[in-house]
Image 1 (tube, rainbow, N blue to C red):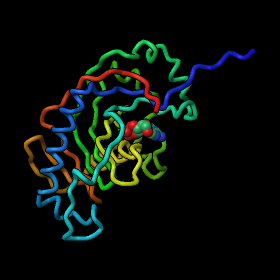
Image 2: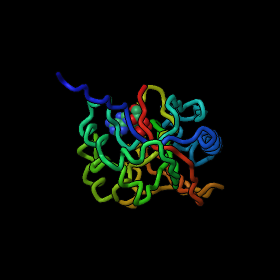
Image 3: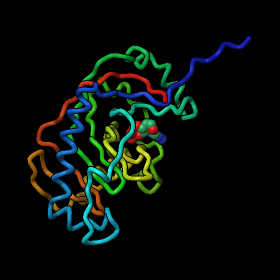
Length: 223
Ligand code: 2AM
């Protein structure tokens, strides 16, 4: 008789505690509310709306269904490459249901996604799968991604525009980091939370003056 394999989850990640989720949602929504009133943002509004002059309410523009989290490994119930190997790692098994603090150092806004950049500690990097930064990255973007430090893709998806999948947030973040590295930053605006930069094609990056920390639990998630 065959032994039944334990089932693999949809994905693994750090999940914000409910009260932390509320706090982060409020702080980031406040940022969105301010962003869409800025003259610098309005100048590039057509990159969001397809038309100049049209207004956009960013709070309505982005939607999110899943609990706030930072994905470490997307397993797709075992269909994703390396899912089983990841689930069997000693460090993964030992970390399950343990608390951990994440540090958010920047926010990104693009016509597709709204996200928080997470800077992983050395210990947290042990849960970050090798090669995760490059997964599903378009060949055109690969060369510029390869020079970024491992873990650069780590983030919390705060919202996606209609019809966009959350996997896009990490790709948008990588693209922004690559453009920054090439020195392609445009307009900069000082805001209460930090320095906002524009990176062409509706891409905005807010480098936080003070990191926002959030308490999380490392866990698996299945729908
Ligand atoms: P996210 O981490 O950017 O939010 C379920 O879809 C979760 O797994 C989401 O959190 C999603 O994106 C993440 N996810 C989906 N597909 C993925 C992929 N191919 N690679 C990495 N993460 C993925």
